[in-house]
Image 1 (cartoon, rainbow, N blue to C red):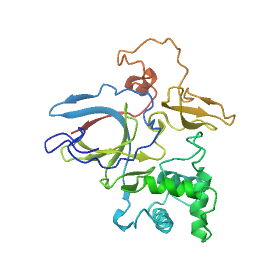
Image 2: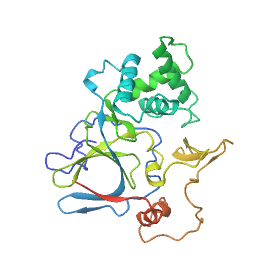
Image 3: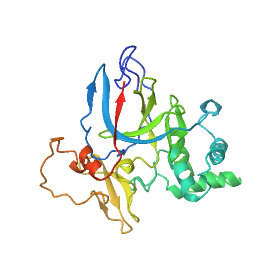
Length: 294
């Protein structure tokens, strides 16, 4: 998001400037159906918002070393570098899956089952593995779809890593920036600490592992998977499936809520889930905190 002019706060867009490319994805459910949680302006244009602190960026891709859109040789080199700088990473399938899914913004069939021409995660992983072995052929199943997604999603965006997450954001991201999920905002955000204790809004980001309410509700129960698809009105909605393949909209991490539940004093917006209000999350033991963004 562009900064708010010479004197404006960082959280206000400056539409007089050219918009930098943001890591947009079709289905973004980082905070689910939570509301802004009483976000308010305090002091001199300081935005006070409630959310979850998810980590501090410890590694950022040296973007200037990337050639063109990024060759497969380049991305293999980046993966090997990550293995060296992060002792928690290894070459197991699950972690390589996270890497390849990040490169394409999770534009994979597991997340979007109706997009039959998008690759599966296993096809993405196989593409990188075959490239490593020198056996990559353009005719490999899923190669073209994965290549197209990576070349569409990564230009102008920088790969970054915190202790527990990796993601993509425009080149403005830097080490020691904070990754957070703010209630009522559909994508994770990058915030930069300032000397006065406030935070500067750098922008939204794709962060693998934080796009489906994980920061506020934790991981899905075993056997469940989050997906996204368009409803009868053409709107992208979050759904959940088990091995049966039947999709439901009710999040299995939340206790059942009666259809005619009473509204909360914290919000009267019908499109927001009262189980995700700050008070309810605190009762669930979620470590929410207040962020002051200037």
